[in-house]
Amino acid sequence: MTARGEFERLGPDAYRGRMQMKGQMEGESVDMTMNFEGKKIRDCNYATESPEAQGQAMLAKTCESALTQSSPMAWQTFAGPNATCASYKPRYCSAMLAQSLTPAYIRSNDQIIKQAGAGHTGGDLSCVDILNVLYNNILHVSPATFTDQNRDRYVQSKGHSAEALYTVLADQGFFPLEELNTLGKYQSHFIGHPTRSVPGVEQNTGALGHGLAVAVGMALAAKLDGRSYRVFTLLGDGELDEGSNWEASLAASHYRLDNLTVIVDRNGLQITGPTESVNPLEPLAEKFCAFGYAVREVDGNDTQALMDVFSQTPFETGKPNLVLAHTLKGKGVSFMENSLKWHHRVPTDEEFEAAWRELDEALAQLEGS
Ligand SMILES: Cc1ncc(C[n+]2csc(CCOP(=O)(O)OP(=O)(O)O)c2C)c(N)n1
Image 1: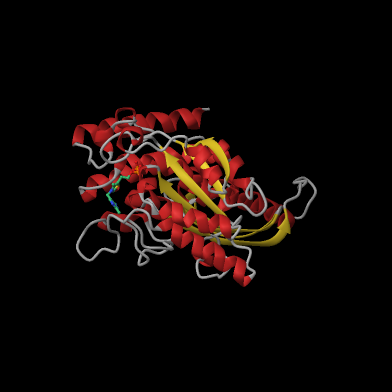
Image 2: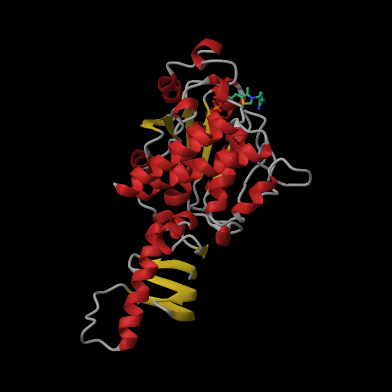
C-alpha cells in the first residue's frame, strides 16, 4: 500500500486534505483519492450518522493526524515507509514529535556528509534541534509561501552548517531529500555553504560575520514597509569574533528591531579550540544586554525549551531578541560530542555504522516512550 497526502490546516480545528491510496488492503486492491475540505473536526457517532458523514469525519481525523505529525519524515512514521507527503503546514509540530525527528535529521545529515566526503559535522549537530523547532513549529514559511512578501525569514549566518539546513529544508518539502546525494558534486547547487540557488535559502552565507547584518536589513525593511514578518538568524559563538556582528547589533538596537531574533549556537568550541581560549566571549549575556538586546538563555538541544522561548518573542517591545542557546557540538552521537576534531570531519565506515546504531537506538527509545 502506498499513500500520498496533502494536508493544510485552515483554522484551529478545520482542515483541507487530499489522500491517494494505492495497493492491497485486507486482500482487496485499492486505488482511491479522498478529498476533504473545510469541515470542523467533531465527534462522529458511527452508529447513527450517514456513511458520507462518517467518511468525512474519518478523513478529518486523518488530516489532523497528518498535520500534528506534520513533516514527511513524521508522516512516513504515521502512514508507512512508502508514504510521501507533498505539502503540509509545518508549524504545528509538537515538542515531542520534534524531539523524535532530531535523530532522523542527524542520520540524514551524517549520511550526506559521508557521501559527499566533506562536512562540518560537529556544528551541524549542535544546531539541528534549533532548526528543527524553527521550521517545524515557529517559522511561517513553506515551499508554497516562500515568495510571499509576508513570509518569515531565516538567515543561517553560520553557513558552514549547511548540511543541517539542507536536511531540514528537504524535510519541509523545499526539494526532494534524494537531491542531497549530489552535495559537493560537480554542477550541484548543494555546496558546502548555502546559496540562494537552493530552494528555501534566503541568503548566501559561509563567510562568517555577514548574516546578522543582512537579517538586520530584512527586519528594518519589515518595519519600514509596515509588514509583520519576523526575521531569525543563527550565529556560531566563534563567529562572534567577527566585529561586524557588533556593528550590526548597534543598528538592531538603534532601530528597535523587536521583529529580529538572533540565536547564538553557544557550543563553546570553534575551529581551533574552545572559544574561551581562542578569544574569550564571556560574560556574553551581559555583553548582548549592553548592546540593547532582550536576552534569554536556553538549553539549545531541548525542543520544548526552544519552542517556549521562541514563542515568547518579542521579549520586550522595541528591543531585538537574543537567544543564547547552550548546545553541545556533535550532539546526538556520543563520540562526536564536545570534540574539536569533529568540527570538520567525515566519519569512517566504522564510525558511520556506530553513529547509525546509536541513532537507531535513540529513535527506538523515543518511539517506545
Ligand atoms: C570570515 C571567515 N573566516 C573564517 C572562516 C573559517 N571557519 C569556518 S567555521 C569556523 C569556526 C566557526 O566557529 P563557530 O562559529 O563557533 O561554529 P560552530 O562551532 O558552531 O560550528 C571558521 C573560523 C569562515 N568561514 N569565514
